[in-house]
Image (cartoon, rainbow over all chains, first blue to last red; front, side):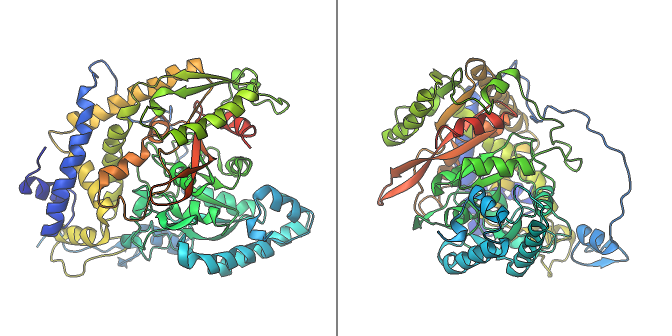
Length: 96
Length: 482
């Protein structure tokens, strides 16, 4: 199969990845050949087969919703290790 | 014998009888790392001071009469597991300076058991790969031939054990990442059943197949480590609640049994196709003969959907990766672009600069497979074929108790030989993805050596696969392969 330049740019946009023109060209070809290989699955009849999403065999696992104490410093470091302000994460402007 | 060359069982006797100290073994391992790792590059971080402190603490516990399976035993940890206060990079530029404020559950368990962490091992970036060449910090080389790969993604852990830099290593296996490098480096690698070991603190790759397990010098050692790290954890809702041992398994694993009478071993014909290197077939058959001599019955079985394992794996894995790696957005951790004018540009530039080529390929492949209009054709299709692959194993395990296969269809290849051909690298996993997709326990054990192209003899592994939660069956059988 072929992926057009527009298609690879669209996938990169959805993936939130900045690509150089060389990368676009490289991944365009590589993804197409991987997808060609994957297409082998089309020959398998699966009309009556249920999909498998997980193999844990578990359903609805619950535990008590308890607040546990953790040092403020570590809790904040788990949240973000770059800019923080009053325990909140600081990000770039979303609206111009 | 140098102390770093000991296995766990040997070290245990010497430590418990007071003939050696944990600090002495730790120093021997650190010295081996210092002298060998310049060439091999198994380690990304060595924490010598913390290791010495942990060893001294273990020695104190030993002196006070405390005993424990891993008390005072030095190990290396794959750098995809969170270690409090010691950086965790996933071999990625995007996490180069990340220091976790907590330990992964397995790391915590080893700490409590008194094991001594020496450092963090190299891997393919975010565990994406089969050669450790995708590490942002350079490849790990095979200790048996420095021009060849150690395998991957746990190449640093396998090479570290093979080169006696530690007594064992922790690693993770999503589609073969413990077993394939163990085969290439001539060591033992155990992928436990999905859910048997807590994944809390493992940087998620493919949440539906990720498993943490040990790489060790002997199968007996792998069992010792497994027993310490296994068990349900409320911080991982997919961890299994209890140990399930069936009646038929009880008979097989009876510790008094001196034979394998009654054990049925299956050789799946799809793993022994005519194109398989005859030398590799012979090596595996030598092991089959050993089991037969011990009383086991050997029979051929069929897993007809085997050939679809790789295409299924390379849809499901990138799909879960594209979701799991979305959290690396440049905001909370790691590499970030300072020039971007708005949030969208910030995401794209930070991620574009932070991720290496294979991570980008998988993120895009998964994003494509999950995107509008393609979900049914790719992701759902792969999920249904996954069901058929699981059914294959269920059918086979009605006829036999365990499966015996090669781990990899060849010995370690040259560095650079496959790095420009992603598909060739994906095919490395041909014999190891099945057990991952089905969540089954599997162990790779050394099976001798094989001649490699333009080189000498390189190590080779054979794989045993058991029904879910029957790790004990694997351990019992490996006793007869020594």
